[in-house]
Amino acid sequence: MLLLLHLFSLFLLVLLGFYVFVADPRNRANQTFALFLSFLALWTVKDLVFWNFPSAGVSTPLWAASSFAISVMMQAALVVFAEVFPDDDKINYRKLAVVFAPGAVLVPTAFAGLLWKRVEVLNGEFQIELSFLAYVFVVYVYLVFGYGAWILVRKYRGALNPQRRQQIGAIIWALSVTVFLKTLANIALPFLGVYDLLPLSAVFVLPGVVIYAYAISNFRLFSIQTALDQFRLFPLTYKVALSIASVAIISFVAFQIPIVWWSFQDHSFEAWRRYLTFSLISALVPNLILLLLVVRTISRPLERITLAAVRVTEGSYGTEVEMRKSNDEIGVLASSFNEMSRKMAADIEAMKLLNEKLIRTEKLAAMGTLAAGVAHEVNNPLASISSLIQLLQSNQGLDGSARERLDLIASQIDRIKRVTQDMMEFGRVRPAARKPVSINRIIEDAVRFARFDGTFKTLEVTQSLDEGLPEVMADADQLQQVVFNLLLNARDAVEAGGGIRIASTFENDEAIVIVEDSGDGISDEDLGKIFDPFFSTKQSTSGTGLGLAVCYGIVTAHGGTIEVQRLDSHGTRFTVRLPIN
Image: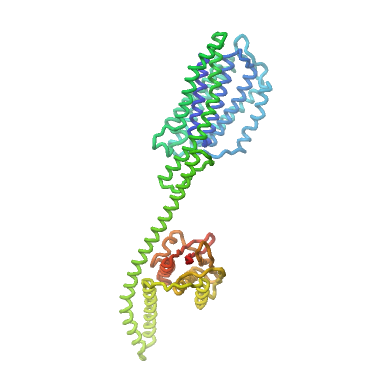
């Protein structure tokens, strides 16, 4: 009966540990939890051999030393698990090195036999007389356990998500049950001289394991909700594992047992019991290695590709599968998926830009027609008003106050004329007279004209022109208007003593003109609207908001592009790209 309990405990630990590890092999919490269960399984194997097969040659001192050593490794795995659970946190190796340093000293003392004065099995009864160092060892083990439990309790108190609190609470409850039962069997009763429950120590981990299993199946312990859950898949890993396990068990029963039965000369019960037990244990290792290879080569890559595909369907275009290149079907599938995702992201981005360009072009056309009509209707009565003002101003009998008011009215009429002139320029559709022109000459002329403005004399204007820049087919007057407007825009953006940089270069069959200023820059909110008609970041009395819209219309009519960018430090950069035909 004890042998069956040990075997049941061993297989349950192995299956649960493998299940948790395969669920997410890259997650640190899954890895350390599986490692913790592996040490529990090692503890079970130790007890199974010692208590069920006394003739196997395992000495009592070796069993006792192994018990002390494995207990330290279990607590170490527990602490690492507590550090990374449940958010897959990084491991603080320096802190753990301090915690585990005493264990590195105490474990060798166990195998040196310094933890007991006497340990033996006498007349079928286990007996041990511990030394003072053994109590130090036990206290250290419980301190390490307490540290791991304290980390989990702290995380439990700080968890805001109710489901996370349930997960951590289930782990704490499972640890509490396990440590209570193992303390009772391994420490409390043996301290009182009662060793009857010592062989069942490995079995006492089952209640805690059952709680772990309940937490995993009901709380989705290590992955609250994955993208694959919506498809209700039966993972390929579990299909392969079930197939391999079924084949192994069937082949063992159908072939190995009859062959051994025929081969054995001594058909004693003890020989069969020993053979069957250790055959089952030894079969675990190669099967687990085989399953891990399947997970690494098939299931894990397919899961990554599937998750990436789900993210693409949810709108994360451009998502790629991160995995090592391989020359098999999965490698080709991953490479093809990455290429498809990149092209999809590029095509969608190009469609967005094209759509924005079409919308802006339609808006410019509509606003141009409206602006031309409004300017025409305003100019007619405005001309009459201006004539009347001039007639009144010619009257020599006006006093100073009246003349001052008429001058003010005339200045406002001039301002209205400038606005309507801008609107007429914006709405005028004039075909470009294209011929080979020098971009550098256009820039130099625009800078020379701009220097007649008094404000430019207080600014530092630098030029960086590419002497080897080819000529482009364009309307020189229109391009000069673009450069001049960009210079005026830069002038308005900087204060006295600021700087403006204008440059030209050649790249990918395009002539590039760059105008930068050292102003405060444009906010992210305004960047997308900077070329819209009548939009301006200046004061209401400083501009009509049509200059950049005119630039955009001219550049796009030449088959080029104009872009705006806020510089990292401060200032704004306008980039004009024109094709070289």
